Length: 81
Image (cartoon, rainbow, N blue to C red; front, side):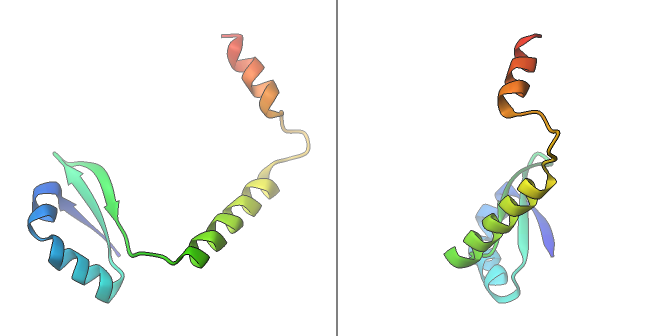
């Protein structure tokens, strides 16, 4: 569950926030003047992070279609403008 908290309140109650994250796995969105500026999330081990990155990479590759333009073609297209 993502919770929103102001930067000053986050600074003031950091130890309580960390305890909540440790116990419940909560995620905090830190805002400054109502604008999101940071996320405080539970630590994920290296293996879990690596697995997530590999899964993301596979999804990106499978989403790319055979007829999609290459990176070089996209760069050339951008240079035209």
